[in-house]
Image (tube, rainbow, N blue to C red; front, side, top):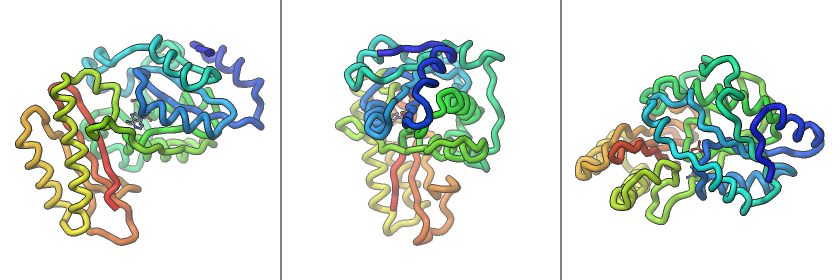
Length: 281
Ligand code: AMP
């Protein structure tokens, strides 16, 4: 398995592949789980070569404690990747390689997509995500890049990023992979106690019920119902519940038959922040 650390090494392996071969990129921050694996399997099945990047991107963390506590497990990650395919190219650069001119973010115009939900609660988060993804896309120059619907707002923002920066790549969204109790898989789940991890199954259960109610109830009444559910579980602190249009990510005003809607949620389980979302129609 090739594990490359620098732009120079990466270029020297990718250039000889030429333009005829398809190249898939799966950007990750490591601590790989089945959610990541589903993206990687899809990339392998659709491309001649697959690059998986592992880089904990400092500019997307608004909370320095969260960055410090983010799990790092490159050895285990490489082991997991080897089992998926020994032909994967791993790109695991140090911070200086990704930010040679200092650790700062570019400022993007995401048309308001970055001003709601995660953007509203995590200042500068999406400029950080945009910065690192733009660098990766330009370094790797993939045919397709794969992102999880687990971070649905991020997925929409990356689609916008490649539009405004005119980057020739297909952005592929992949479904959310869940633990048996419905909790969306996340590297952060490792920080939950077994009891809390079980209780956190409530997040998806609530989203599923919200979906059922969406056929007959107003968004406001659904959101009020969700807020009440969490009041009964003091270990799980609801940060937000939103029902938005899928394209604009703006809160729903009046349901329209030709529009798609999604519910988004962020919850603190102790100090671990968990997010999830569900398609409503
Ligand atoms: P991360 O390492 O958390 O930055 O995630 C890397 C990629 O994997 C992102 O595109 C995530 O949306 C995606 N991802 C993370 N968790 C899941 C999951 N449970 N199901 C599907 N995709 C996921």
